[in-house]
Picture 1 (cartoon, rainbow, N blue to C red):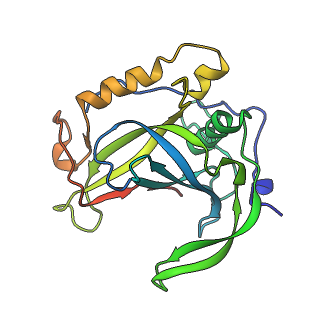
Picture 2: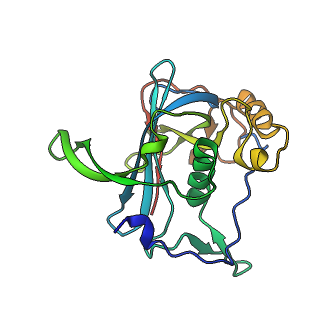
Picture 3: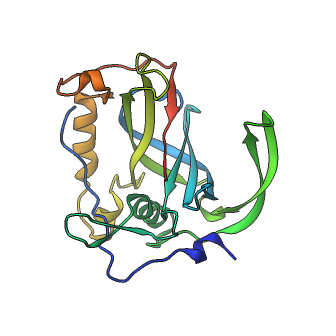
Length: 233
């Protein structure tokens, strides 16, 4: 049975609204901004605690690659969380992002169709690529997609004196119309990408280090130390 069939949802879930923050504050991608990508990989994974995620690898025209995992459930396979203030069920941001990506690529709002395939993955214990079986969204691979890339610096959990720079695609957009998924569904003009790029131009790299809290900074990251974001449960 597909891992996606084990997801617990609810008709009363509040869907996450797409929005871009106006506050100032990948490998080899060193500054925030909109980029055009080719989708190299979309695989379904399960964390050691049971959360289901979608692992995506994107590649720019220049060959710069970015890999990130969007978790679409918690460890109980629920696609939502409980808002502590309102006690309402709200869709997990990762679930919303993957549904938006599928809509932009395949025209269907929801999780992608997957099938089991044998693929190559790097095994850090074996220190080499090994063959594994994964559920793959085959109809997404090779397609073009726009991505709003956010770059930030944060403290290393091992040594706070050595900050790390992280990269993730915070929003996807249509590479032809420049519209976010919600704008495309509602047939609106592409305004969100304009806002995102304005913010990215002012703050190419956000500084989230403890030493910088409360201090408005704009910095440029070096290529070394840039890692792809893996946010999960």
